[in-house]
Amino acid sequence: MSRPDTVRFRYHQALLAAAIVAVVGALPLATAAWYLLPVLLVPLAVAVWAYRAGTDADAGELRLRALAGERRIRWDRIVELAADPRGRAVARLDDGQEIVLPAVRRTDLPRLVSVTGQTLPDAG
Image (cartoon, rainbow, N blue to C red; front, side, top):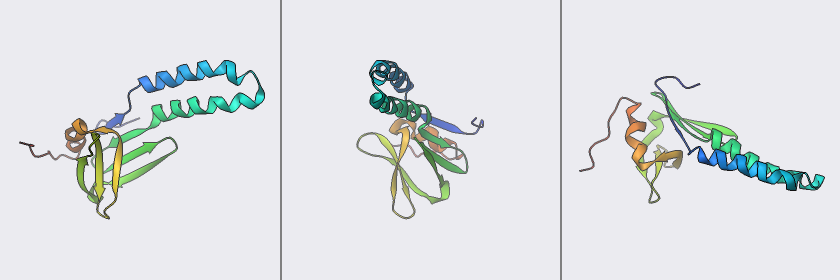
């Protein structure tokens, strides 16, 4: 469960609903023969990813969550937050590495930065 001072970004829940529909749709095929059972793995993996993947931010760090795993990045390692041409939020680290923040869009950057107690300069 997230703490009150944690900001969470997740993908739209319609992805989860679509994955569940795909699981139900794949059931007749998967149960037709034992060797077709792995067909269910794809929509199940998409369902788990849609539920789990995203970015959590608090005053101390960012947590980037994927299908299986999590990466933690302290705010002091982040040199710059920006948006790529596709509108996704990108964090540039002190070692020059650029990381796309899952489920965070350009318009979410002020909310992401606000959890640190700072504000973004006006882009005027």
